[in-house]
Image (cartoon, rainbow, N blue to C red; front, side, top):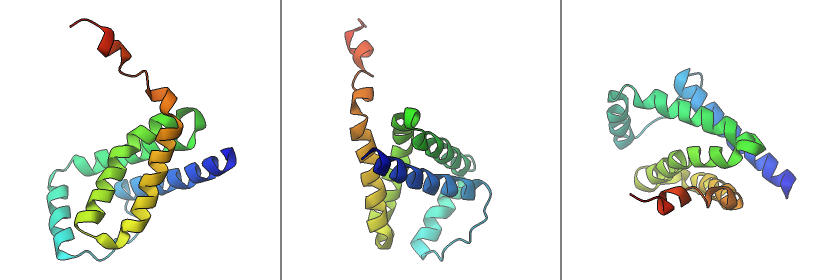
Length: 130
């Protein structure tokens, strides 16, 4: 199981690394967009700092996701990106929903597998007096 997790993590990380690098240094052709997608991306690109931020978050999360010691942190960093991707495919482009659900499932699997690393994150906030 450890080997399967490593292979899946490497593939998952490579996918997000390639996607993040493509946002910063466009080297892959963009697919044809529908009119609603063009409108959405127009608004998205109007916020000039958002696209590079998403790219850097994808790159950092992908690198951490591949390294077993940091995989739990990488899974948390990439989670908002995968949620955004799944919401995009549910609302705008249902054709890519199957792959998106698989990616989201991998992310949730890694988070569940590392749950013991997360369970004490809020303990100091709960016990400290306000």
